Amino acid sequence: MNIVEIYEKFPKQSDCIEFLETIKWENQPTCPYCSSKQHTSRKDGKYNMNRYHCNTCNTDYTVLIGTIFQNTKLQLQKWFLAICLILNGEKGISSRQLSRDLKVTKDTACLIQLRVREVMKQNHELLLDIVEMGETCINGKQRKNKIS
Image (cartoon, rainbow, N blue to C red):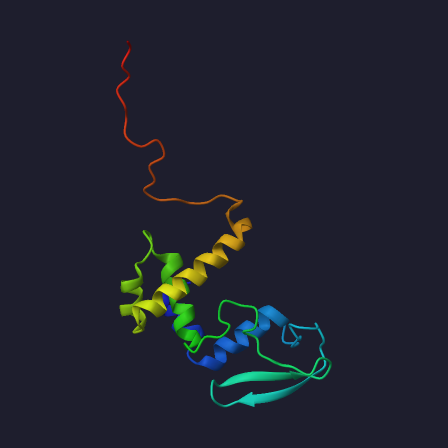
């Protein structure tokens, strides 16, 4: 996806939450702690997010538990945009450039990059098929062979 598609598909925080719930739970919320499907829905007005209370283990949870978005106060639209910029950048993107693009601090941009790269390392199965690489030098500089 490109930047325009991100903004068209996810114009509001609630659209991002619905998308994550569809991917993670297939619209059937499941407790991340005990895997129970028995829950009570709650509205979290502070972050405009669906919050659930597990009736089995008596804990509250959201779709963000167990993802790179856990414990973040940054809007999910900015997270999705950051992921798009990191993945689509031909030569990558610096944390300073990412901070300017997202209007966040350099430290926040660095944390976003760190989390995205960590997830990319964990899901290395994505790189098992054909991988397209641009402007890659494999052998380095040519050496002169000296015969003694």
